[in-house]
Length: 468
Image (cartoon, rainbow, N blue to C red; front, side, top):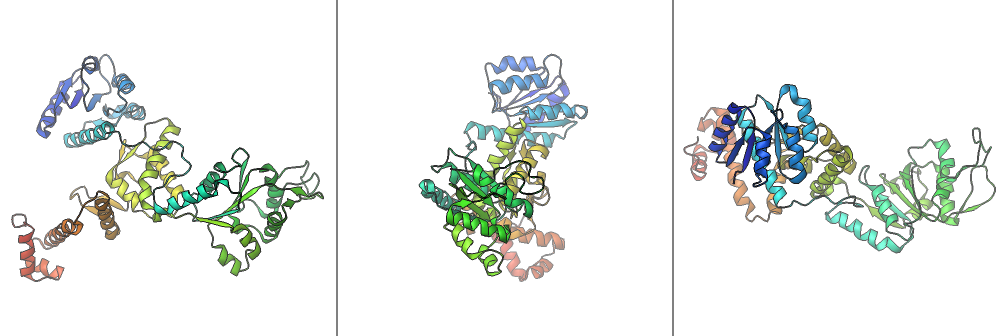
């Protein structure tokens, strides 16, 4: 069986691929038309296909559509002249693994084919797909604690205070608490108290009577009334003005409130969930937040970890967000290479999960290929990349790169990790030092803080005699 099929009406292109694939030891078959390849596809399925976009008879786009209909996981690389770039992008969005502009570098082309073959292997073993529309994703111990708390609170109407940095997913947790509560069939109403002007927030929360202030031409329900029998989520509660803190405290204490300009008390059957990125204890000490209100809200506290505290969740979240962005845009999901995933996992993400979600949307729209490498990430993200000449990891913080490598090895269940890392570390140090000194061992030894004999012994132990 042929591993790779090359389809092009240009005989010289087919010849170049034949020589290159034979040199790489990759089984192949070549076809001069899509019709010829489709006839054979009924009897045999390759592991990857390289197809020109414009040929006599059926075009590469038509061929791609037919292949994807019956073999959605089969990687197809579309070749195109530069003038056909727009068509190639359309093909890529329709399911092509990647496009290869003509004229191309044959080493680049074979490297792309190798990537396509690796992708085919992942498809064949059935790589786990992202969960569709889950409440929250997370495998880190800190997130498992949050999940357990949500489970314990499923039959409770207790007030909950969710703390965590901006973008960590506090509203998602609030929605999950509502969805898994006896109030799930009733409204979930969310309001960001920091996003509404101070003079409008009271009316927004409690509603107003007609004529209660200029512009109040009709009675209006507030968020408390809208959330009746359900859940009211008060986000960024730490920024609530002091006078409204007093009114909120009265509602939580007495269970009644008044519309602005109203005289009749209104019963509030609402579960309140509050959230903040601030340290409310400090706000209380500063006199910026009422202590009695703090204790009313702080019945049950859930702390959401920052994304940098749950780095092992980054791959899971990234795959989920990439799949969701692709579904929203109607394109094939992008896939992150190992070096790109390493760069993401080691980024600090000051914007937390929201920043990762936005990044995945950026990748879906802006990254040039189906498989995204570290070099394709925005500069502020790609802290760890691979040097194209040496193949070594380059990082603004080499400790982060080392930590990523160790973490990867431990995750794979490797033993005696130091026995593997130290020789590679010493080899790299020696190679760079000798390259810097032009091969002069005495100078290299001095730069490394070793004696010449130590350097010579290390070179012998590492089997580098014939290399340096």
